[in-house]
Structures are given as C-alpha cells and as structure tokens.
Length: 192
Ligand code: ATP
Image (cartoon, rainbow, N blue to C red):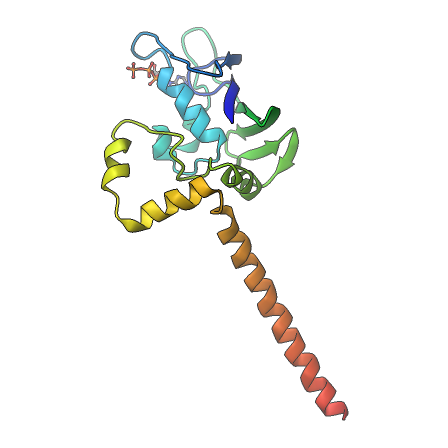
C-alpha cells in the first residue's frame, strides 16, 4: 500500500486545485515556516475521516476551508482527494465540505457514508488509530500507552477493527429478529 497522490482544493492555505504526487519510496516536503507543510498532513487526516477538529489544528469546521487573503476571496468549499495504491490498484477517497454543511465522502467517485470509508480503511490498517501517522509527540504516546490502546493498535494492524462495528450492527439485528420470533411464537400458541 502506498500513498500515490493528494489533491487539495481550497483546503486551508491551498487556493484552487493543487495536486501533490508522492514517491513510492520516500517523500520529503520542505518549505519556509507557515508555507503549508503541516496543512498537507492535516488534509490527509481530514480525508481519512478525522472528526476531531482540534487534531486538524482548527477550532471550527469551516476553518479548513480557504479563508481568503489580500489577493483571493474566501472559498465556499474545500475538497481533498487521496489516491492510495493498494496491491497495484488505485483507490480514491475524497471528502468535501461546504460552509455550514456536513462533509460528503466519496469512495472511487461514489458518495458513501463516513462509516463506509472507515470500514474500507480499517481493512488495510489505515483506521483511526493506525500508526500510519506519527505526529509530533505521538511516538512517546505510542510507547507509553496502556494496554487498551495497544490492543486497538494491534487490531488495527491486523485489519480487524472494522469488524467490531459490524458485529455490533449484526447483534442489534439479531435482537430484533429474536423479539419478532417471540411475538410469532406467542401468536402460534394462541392459535393452538
Ligand atoms: P511550520 O514550518 O512553521 O510548521 P508549515 O509549513 O507547517 O509551518 P502550516 O502550519 O501548514 O505551515 O500553514 C500555516 C499557514 O496556513 C498559515 O499561514 C495560516 O494562515 C494558513 N492557513 C491555515 N488555515 C487557513 C485557511 N482556512 N485559509 C487560509 N490560510 C490558512
């Protein structure tokens, strides 16, 4: 699996459409202070479904949309598209946000729910707690974490974390079926 490219449209300091290709081996991003290097990492976190706005170094959701400067007026929406190459096939994940609206998510161009994106990512160990991202200070956090978090990480690497949600959903369905079954059973007894 590797990160093939990232396309940022009006995301934070990126005005209009900007495509960043990544090398399959190693990519270094350099630039002066405040030029937008960390914004690129924020964009990757965001498109992968980050819900904690503070993790994106913002206070309000709208702050991830280009806010205008001396030369350009503010944008109405932001979009980020990530191309992941998985076993030699390209997969596109995108997230789009209009001001005052909720995010829209797309997998290979088809609109999906956040949980579909999360399930897809968990299958490849790229979920919420994956260590694909190690931000400043996170190496310490990783080493010093207590058992619960380490278990989450291991499940994530093994690609099974997505199944917890599926299991919960199925158990709920099972409960509904069991209560319906009981209702039918009572009706059957009445008829006998
Ligand atoms: P450093 O090397 O100091 O860590 P950096 O290259 O990582 O800097 P970033 O933190 O990515 O820089 O970028 C910060 C810049 O992004 C600031 O100039 C800030 O004004 C700008 N910025 C952040 N959000 C927006 C937004 N919504 N609209 C316009 N500009 C924004």
